[in-house]
Image (cartoon, rainbow, N blue to C red; front, side, top):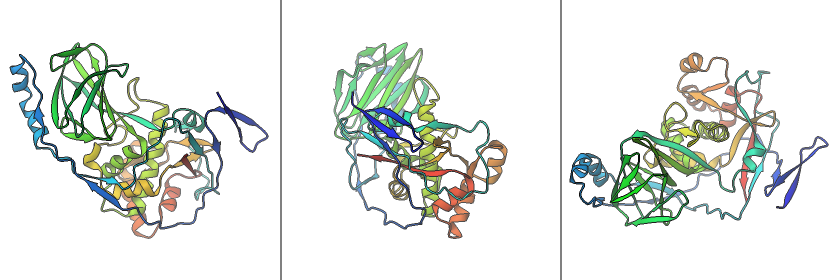
Length: 363
């Protein structure tokens, strides 16, 4: 395996297999880059129930869930140019400390997380996060906006279901559906960059269903930047200032990467609730949330050369109550500062002192 020497500027070289990491200074000058125009894709599937031979009672039991699928329409904005990262391409991590975000001498409190960036650089050409979107479920109704492949744990095709077909998965110590049963996890893979429907929401990426006794765990494997489209839209009103939304995007990206290196569970990195970051799939994406992610693409916060866990909460009062002793951003205060003319870098500097901006870049 080819190794590339990384010089840290301290008289020391580190070899990183397959990936390159470099330092590039980022300007602290605020720039109002024009946000890219996004085109609208409106998958409009009419879901129909998949046949479950001999399981009339199961179909009746799940009639309400299937009806949600019939009525639910995927109407979301998609970015104009899709980033297609070939598996042969590598991830270049530019850890780009600036002169530093403005600080008042505060240091990171004990217990706040920081992660070695080199571990992220060596992980994957495309950064994927694993989000638990359903736990303890006896029944899962799923489908695809495009033909949906059902794969076994080794990613071998079990079945291929037509687009717009609702499939009922039932927990039976394993997972049973449409006359088929698996004792091991199964994948739901939408072809041609389609979306997956779970319960009453659409998701990007692919889905892993994990049998756990008499229940099913549902995990969404999704690209980090696309995950952030939803998180920013769920965590902040899209009517708020673009600078506050950009600060939120950077904080959420840093937080997610920390938990990708310190996963919540063997099966997933984060949950989809306030326990970690709220994530609602396509339903919480907006043009504003997408623009805030795109305009801060790859920007993260670091401290002392390590990835910084950028914690945040809704208000100053919640920050004081639940994040006492940690550097944390108040979202409403971030919006107030943005309304006074602060840009996202100034906002971040006010909450996360002695941190630096760095950029994850893809090539």
